[in-house]
Length: 93
Image (cartoon, rainbow, N blue to C red; front, side):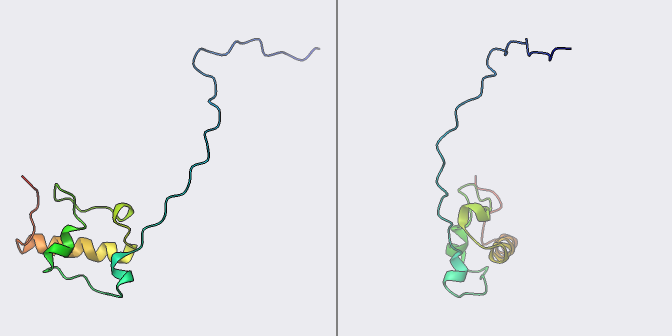
């Protein structure tokens, strides 16, 4: 028996793309609170909390802000407390 040959033609648009250039890793942002050796987040400091909120009053992710996981949890809790006390809006209109 002779070995089978691949007689199928490649479909249109299924060619592989050439390898793209290797992308550079972006610099990791450092945690705002760990840099200042501040181990608490004050919910009454509205100007500081606004740095961690979007223009639509949503909490920004740690990937965007650069916070470590522990500080990101503290920031989220502080923002929620400030919203409850009516210091920050739930939604921006």
